[in-house]
Image (spheres, rainbow, N blue to C red):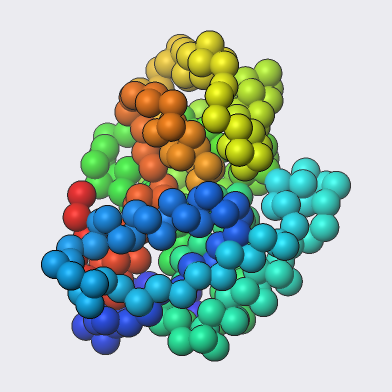
Length: 244
């Protein structure tokens, strides 16, 4: 069951399940954002959240690129476990993992919010005339076309880095996963300049490590944070008020 158009009142004070571990920092970032974006005056007004920080899930990009283990069964296992533990809705803080969304959702009886769809709806709401959007993501996300397919329905073309710049983006993503705290800012500037030359004025940070990295390095610009959008969607879906 993937339909998220159901009675919010029914889910009031219900439980959110986070299918995490891809990676741990992204999982922590989503959890943190749900807390700070939930309108609450005390502990008891916050949302009940279950987290499966399942770090054993094989690398999604490696599989999509053709040289890694299929992670689908691991994600299905984690999703079903969250449902059995009492989750009323599931969210997954990994953009690349949404390549497997349709397979995972077949095994669930509870709603599973699609982060990519939520990002597309948000873009259309705040930039109704947008015809192009930049994307920084893993090579797996870029190759799989998960954003391209969804945004095409909204009449938006996805602009990605060239091959050399994609290598730099991947290096940043996997560096953050490995705990690196320093990065060549010239590489970031080069990537953003390339996108600007393609007449792109807004960029999706389409890997959940990227909002963490950009905040850590204090990089400013017109960036869309899918993790924040997912957090807000989940909060509202369980009948609570999400702050901006």
